[in-house]
Length: 110
Image (cartoon, rainbow, N blue to C red):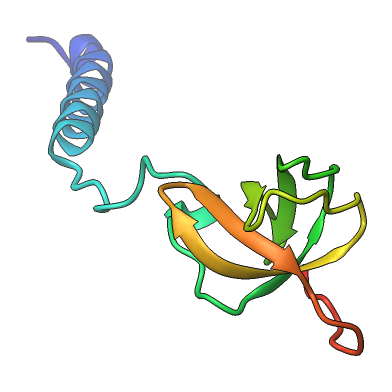
């Protein structure tokens, strides 16, 4: 190997090493247990009593905003909950929150 071939050969070797390291890191990367789950950060549960706001009419199904995330929701008793109304989570069915209207005087969060 001549001195004119050393520098290009070294560059090629470095590039190949970087590619191999990148492929190995991507292949062996450990995924978080909830990385593919719903919600920002993979949040899949909401505590009972958490307050939010209806972002659509719930008649009885719709969408609510809880902790700056939108969730599918159903009215607990099947009644209409108007868009913009404060709600409180009473239970959860999978990724659907079961909510009821928040009582007056309690500020909503969301």
